[in-house]
Image (spheres, helix red, strand yellow):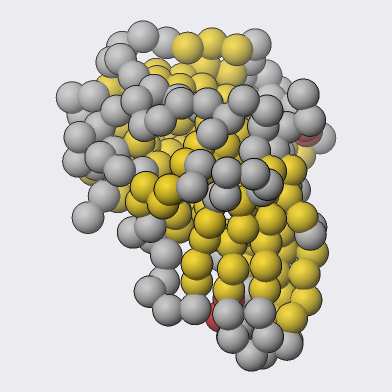
Length: 109
Length: 115
C-alpha cells in the first residue's frame, strides 16, 4: 500500500530559526512529490518536485527530492510567525495523491 | 479567477440525514478530486472525477457515499444516512490536467458535523 510519512509531527521553534521538515515515501509508479501549507483552511500549493537533486526555491522556502532514498525535505530559513501552519507532503503515485499526516510547525516570537 | 469554491462551508446534520457538499472547480479545470480530513490527520483521497465520469473512487466508502460531476454545474459529494464518524472536513481540489504532472488547487473545505 502506498505510504507517505512525515517527520517530525510537531515542531516548535523561535522566530529566526531555520527548520527542516522531512517526508519519506513508498509509492508505486512515482510521478511527483508536492508540498502544501495548510493554515486554518485549504492547503495551498508550495512546490512540485519530479527530479532528484534539483532544488526548488521560493523566497525563504526551498525543497529538494531524493528519488534514490525516497525522501524530500522542506527547508524554511529565517522563520517568521506567519510560517506557523501544518505542512503537508503528498506523493502522486499510480492513481492518486497520497498525503502524509503533516508536520505542525509553530513559530514563537 | 475565483478559485475553487465549496459550499456550504459548515454543515450540521443529525444522524441518519443526508449531506450534500458542492464543489465548483476553477475556471478551465475539468478534473475534480475530493478528500476527507479527520481531526489531526492528513488528507485522505476519496474520489477523482472528470466531467460526467468517475475516474477513480478507490478511496470512497462502498456504502452511503457517492459523487458526481455533471456536464453542467458543480461536483457533488453526497453522504446518505450520516453517522458521527462522517464528521470531518471535506476538501475539493481541481486541476486543469489529468494525472501526469499537475497541481491541484484546493477549495476552502466544508466542515461537516454530525450530531
